[in-house]
Amino acid sequence: MMFKKLLLIPIVLWVLSGCSSQPAQPLQIQVLQQLPALAAEFETTVETDGHGDEPARSYRWRFWRAADYVETHNLHDDSGEIWSKSAGTVAYQQVFHNQRQVIDYLPGDLKAIGAEPDWRAISTLLNQATIAPLLADRREEALGRPALLYKSRSPDDVMEVSWLAREQLPALIKRSEHGHTLTTRIVALYPLAQSPWPYRRSGDYAYTDFADIGDKENDAFIKSILPKIKGGQSHRH
Image (cartoon, rainbow, N blue to C red; front, side, top):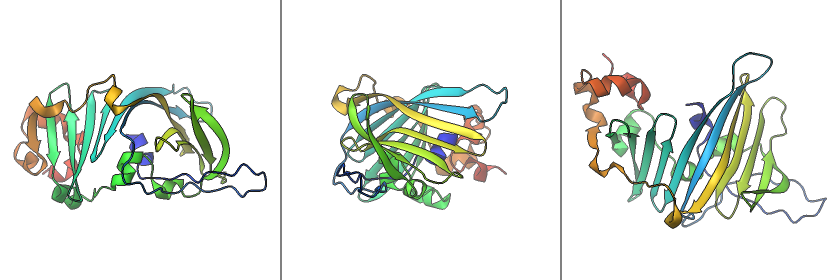
């Protein structure tokens, strides 16, 4: 999905002094021992720029973050992802809730398909390389919480990020490129202990190791999800 190309790798907030002569500060990575545990819901909208007849497309997705654990759930297709960190390594699962199935990736699997994860990227939803050109623009609020809006200064790469420093999470990511504008906006936010949405629900699902997919390509479920899974193309004969 398009938003995944934009959502990945950490950040940090340099608080402005409020002085009008203070140079605009860049958005940078903040190193924290442990990020706040929280649950959030986002809405992502894709719009075609110009005067085309293609309607905007929107979908909602949820995000849970705990120590050494991140889960997402795309409400549009009822799929999700789970990232878990242990002893410095990160494992990954793709979850298909309708079929009650999980594709399980070991750290070695991710390395083999060129998808080695950056934990701070996963847990903060921002990519440092993508946000490097952003500079602080103004203070604002998101869901009643203080935020700081960052903008790019290049007309060729239009991007905005509204950053919740206390929560270490973006309230808004907006980017225009290749004739499309992609906007991801937070619509709900809770402490993880007060999450109204259940998570960690994959315990009673059927599990398939990623390394075994090549032996199961005639399975109806594997056939149906092969184009959607990380590294799935590498298993085609």
